[in-house]
Image 1 (spheres, one colour):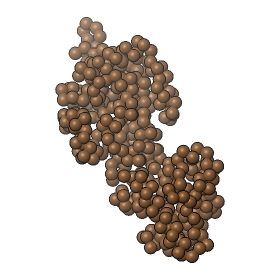
Image 2 (cartoon, helix red, strand yellow; image 1 turned 120 degrees about the horizontal axis):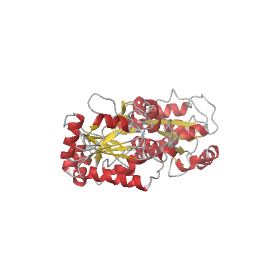
Image 3 (cartoon, helix red, strand yellow; image 1 turned 120 degrees about the vertical axis):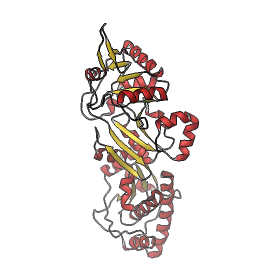
Image 4 (cartoon, helix red, strand yellow; image 1 turned 90 degrees about the horizontal axis):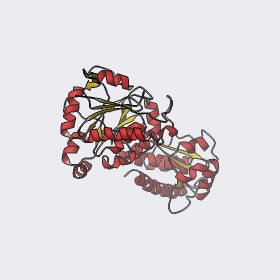
Length: 401
């Protein structure tokens, strides 16, 4: 079989190094290059195999149908019951394949896609039924296994252009033959998949190779699985586990004045209700992708919760004895994804400390300011605690459904 090799120039391939927002922007391609990519997309649409570049390693693009995948299995020497990773040219197309996302998954996608990350999603069985209607039963059988699907959205202009031109779902394993390392440039792909033909050109295992130059990272994508039981790095690649944790952790912050009563109680109630909703112990919230904290706009660092707050929370099975106050800083606000203020005045203080916090800050209670029980009797704490508990339950229920 003849293999067509087309040279394509990525006009603004970023230098090797960290993933930057600039590298994720759409980059223009010349008209001749676009025509070459269209030819490759047509080849894939007709059931052909096309080797193409990504920012990690080269991949083999294949239409997700039974006949095409059988051929890919032969080239990769892979068992037919295994699934390949679906590739998307635009992350906005994810909803076609994953109907519902958890807040940590949404944050990870926002921070890491397009980019060198493969995410294995666990799909609810009810959603699988809906997908069978929208995608077709056969396509679901080919893409999903045990209610999971692996998906990647590469950060490479050639890859995105190719994938967006394909009319069908496209899977793409790494471009390597049995026992060899994935190709990180076109030369390696040509050596692995072709041999010189007697009458010129190349004979090969694939129909086309898009030569887009060397890959940016020259190493595989990181693979992360996200499920109702938490998240797990299945393979560390470009991103480390620590980077993944930072990119997906949803940070919830409660703010009051001294961080010994109201926001401290809110933090304790939030951890309790969040753990109940997620079906885990409080100490596993981090592994589930959540971090709940509190701070005070004029707090002194290291002060324990007030006696009234500790007593009230203990009646609700919330342990506050280990709480230590924190003074609110711009860094704390920058890290937070959701900020709940005990009063309108606190919200003003939050925006003063970090103006960008205004877009992610809201009152904890829809009923107005929550009065400070400090200095009052235990009845004041009971009234305050009841308001906070009700408001926290509502806010957490809005976040985690």
